[in-house]
Length: 539
Image (cartoon, rainbow, N blue to C red; front, side, top):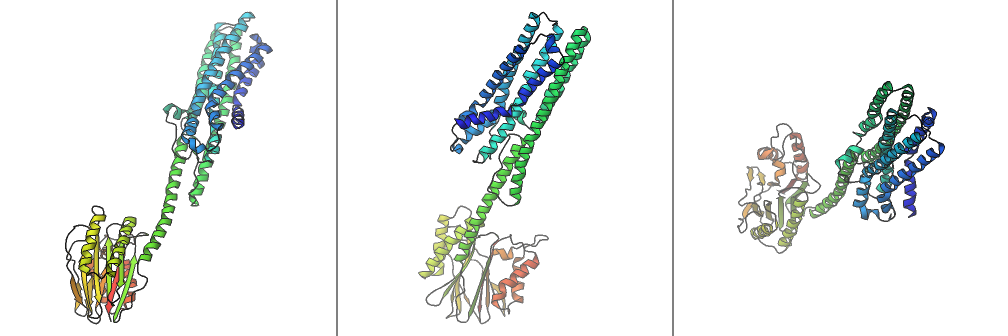
């Protein structure tokens, strides 16, 4: 209860322009003699002040009442996020209604009381003087006072929103949807509203004052011109206050935005910029928050991808097995943190080795998960020493059941048999490996579609004999489909054959470096596709 009352007292302090304008009007009327001419005594002035305080404090209480109910339960405001944001968004509109009603009631009261005092005291009070007095009261109490009250309330609400923002509120979407209210608080339209209320409207009233003064007697002319002084004084003072409120609000909002941009520039994405006002700057703050949220998710994703990449690298072989008379070399480079390329050498107890290179369609997480599943199945099948064509049939059936429509896996799988210097192999839709020797280069063509597309098909097995010096280059399409920066022409199998022929005598462990140099010189973009090599040479 104490917190709500304390905030209400703070709100009343923000309404200081209202008594300033009221006192200014009374002082100017006393100074120019109009109060004396109308017979307005000190008692009447005190009664006017009491009525003013009652009406405008009542309007303040009515406007603040929804906020007071929220502030009485300050614990865990995030549970009432929608309610709090809705009430705060409606606060300026509620303020306008409350103070407009109070202002016009006060204007009518002044018109009735002052007119009655003047007539009862038999003071000069013509219809021209009555009209001038009425216009002043209506402008001051019915137009200027509500405008000042709304501006004061907007300044107060920005302070209150800053406080709530520390608890996670007012950082997302704008709660207000009233079109009229948007015009009322918009930084684009508020200067025009200030001009209308303190410039255009007073000028119209002054024009009417001039007309009334020219048509009246000397006493009427003096009274009307004196009322013009009151009007000008209130307009100038009110305009200055409204402009100061506007600049103060913009300063507070831009300071908050500047702080958010500073955090954004420094790479701190955990904080949020409070939406201090539901206008264009509020939209900008919401946009910054959306950007920081997205960047934070991106940073979190980077961490997750780093972990996933570490796990995926752990699935790849660390060292090639030692095989008499043979040299093996593997290499992989992904275009993302994780990818769908996979290579492996699985040594069996009898000395034979499974050589596997696979390419999962797509990139990123989905391809990496499929690759991990494929690796687990392959190692399990190798341990039971299934014939590779039977293993390929099993893998195809399993992937047809598990992969989403349109996804597939190209696979080259060979069983190297060092004792006979031969290799049994299956090519399931994979780019043909190249077998290079002194006689030339021969591709090991695919004889069946990729895994996961057609269930129930049988994969044929091929046999290749290795002669001394023979080199087998197994690769993924990331090599041949690398494109140049100019013209986007693919590297292609022909260039790969030429490169292999030129490096047939080079050490096998230099192949990855040499091929990457060739692709980079060609203009390869590392984001084109994953790239994997598995090289075999009989020494």
